[in-house]
Length: 252
Image 1 (cartoon, one colour):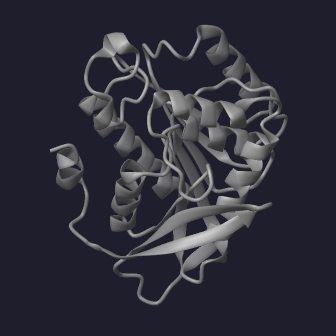
Image 2 (cartoon, helix red, strand yellow; image 1 turned 180 degrees about the horizontal axis):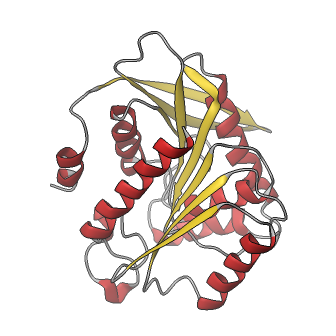
């Protein structure tokens, strides 16, 4: 049921395979999964690199990667905690994500960059056509990568946090920021500062809000009680997916 809307709007092509991709950042081994489309006609394909919410690289991210592969793109579901670690509860998730969000987030940027760099190395991938996307903490992660000035075809944040200790001065990527209009975890001043940051840097960005949506609006596992501040919103999920697909067609 939770993926019903995707079955309604996506082509019926199957993804061909899921490959384990391991790589290092210092002494840490990051365990990610590459999902490939069924039909490539022997050609290299664009790739979408996905970064997880604070619970880690679990089933939700892999399912999204599979849906992207059905669109004809490669998709790498990237690990950021190391050894494929998943948080056992929100308390542990807050600790794991918090450790990477402290200071200038240099370690977070290193791990995001490693995932993107290793996606480019895959023989099935067109390394000139790369988009990085993220959900919640993953949205924060890809925005930090964009701030570092790395060149990508695009960056997409689904209900990510917008604050930073190191504002970007030059964005070498197009950005799509998908936001819940009543998300209590993102302050108005953070939104204002973020837009000001992008404007000053002359970034090419799109900002889209979804009415009635709070944090985690794409994740059915978040439940439907908006009073908790994080909840699934089927309409916002469907609309954001359509906006995401349009963005991919533009940048690829």
